Image 1 (cartoon, one colour):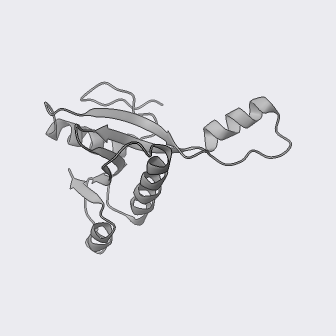
Image 2: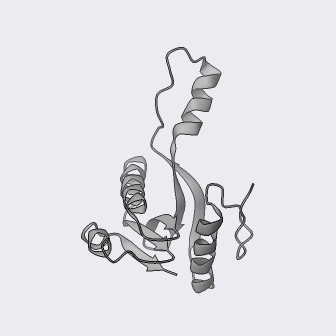
Length: 140
C-alpha cells in the first residue's frame, strides 16, 4: 500500500500511516517556507551480497539493504537529515544519528548537515540524550 502526503500529494515511500500523519503536520506548519524535500534518500552502500549471488541478484540485494533516510530537507543554508516517528524513542535516536553519519560520508561537499527528529510526542527521559547528541527535535 502506498502512503501519500495529504499536504503535497507526494508518495512517502517507506513511511507508515502514523509517520505520514506526523510528517503532514510538520509540512502544514511550514507551508509557504522556502525548502526542498527529498524522500527515501539512500545512504551508505548496503550489505555485501552472498558469494553465490549472480550479478543481477547482487544489484537487487544492494538496493534492498541500503539504508534510507525518511526525508532530507534542504534549506538555503542548511541540510536536515530527518527521521519521522510518532513518538520520540531510542529507535529514532539511533536512526537519525546513523543516517546523518552516512549522509555526511556520502556527501562531504554538503555543509551544515543537521540531524532532526520530527515526532508527535516526547519521551521526557530521552530529551537530554537527544540534546546531548545535538539532534533538533520538532514536536508536531
